[in-house]
Image (cartoon, rainbow, N blue to C red; front, side):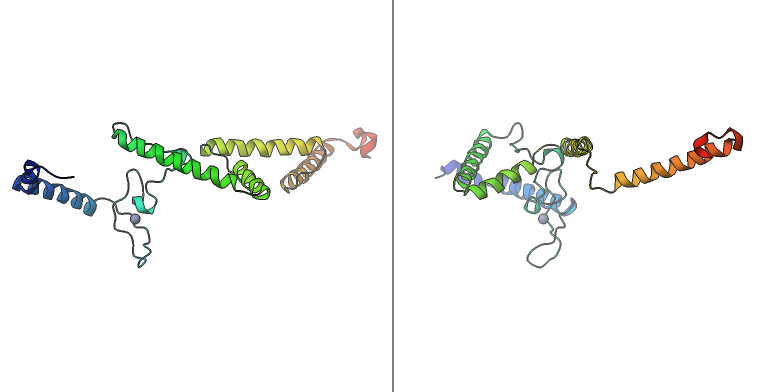
Length: 190
Ligand SMILES: [Zn+2]
């Protein structure tokens, strides 16, 4: 890209140099005064001095830009108002990545494919709440299935509860017996 004389003159002008320096100083001040990343750096283990990424706890290089919380599994797109070229770049990058993933799947052996599918099924996307609900649902379903088949679930909780219930029933029976006179006792209790 060649610059016109007018453009060159502008870049060399005191006005532009001053504006550029002002911008740099603002950025430096922001970096110096804002919250720091603090992640352990690979070079010497010292805390990272870079400013944190937007809405993050870490800088972009240390995962600050990685989606978290309910968006962890969602693809992130440029913010509203960002240049169209940014969106186009993102879309072509995603297309390239999807193509590569498809290539990898196509090259898998049947066993590898089975493992892959199993993992995919086990790691379903969703918000943390949705995934917790699904987990609870699966647990409840297993419990009901086990009860239907009259199988004791392997967790010790049920047997503990049953023992507790027996103990309480025993205590209730004893209380009941205490209330009766010996003569009024039904035959079975004598
Ligand atoms: Zn960092």
